[in-house]
Length: 367
Image (cartoon, rainbow, N blue to C red; front, top):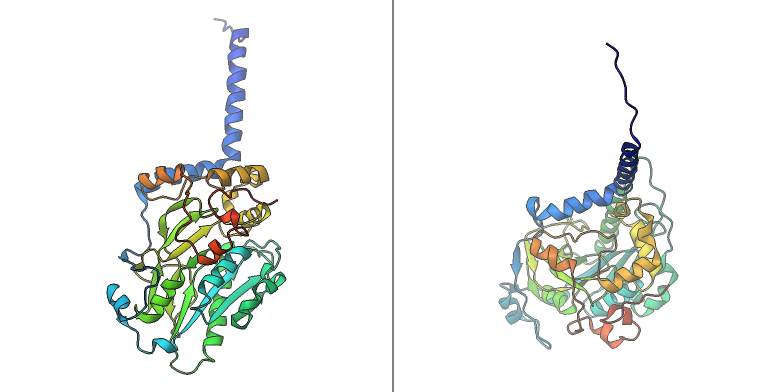
């Protein structure tokens, strides 16, 4: 019995070819955007499988303008007044990237309560890309603080085989630990020293530091900061907790991770991606430890797209918010711009025209 084969009809070809092209196009899209797709699925389901790992014991924070930091203030927070509070030293330690504006605001906010500002700067990003030494280049801008500044340049280098940006960040924090130890050993014996450990964009309020100088809070405490994006126009939440204050001991090291379960409420401001110029955004996106969020999609670095993203209060990488509840996830996906600039750093308000880009209505950035 002979077997006959029928040639595909013209109609079948018209169906097969579009399906094939669609399938190939769909596969190409998945391959090109696999990082973004993976993160969308991960962030969309995070409230189902993850929980915030920050400190859980939140201490109510009491403050009013003109309030004295004394035994009564300590009592309000459940603490005793610190013995020898007048002789305590305070060190503010930061790793310098490019945030000169936030550094100026920070140093003016903390000048009256900080004895020394420690700054470590490199000529390379954590990902090994060459960058300017912004502070060294513009150090004259901070001349009023010169006697308080302890600066250290850390030579950068391209990442070695098997080395990640996280490894470089850890090594840089270790260098800050060594710098702090060297300086603190020169102080008179038994000097109580508080060290502020936070990124430049995590700014403790002056009155917060004054309170912690006055009161015996223990060996360490985290600071809950008002969490802003791009400027003080877009407030995300109150979830920023990595900033901390430590009573220095030989076993203390410079860190940006959880060190205890105490968290002092509403202690300052975290202004993430709060840059004056568009190129600073590109340097940050390519150079920090989470630079893999670009995921090969170089369109994310388009200057016009970045500008539009800032003015809309959307995520710079086009990702979903990092939220641990669907209520927070939905609220952060549709932020409403603030129209209030009450309760912000005094130096920022006093110099509002210089720092217009950080205030409500100032979303346009310089090229």
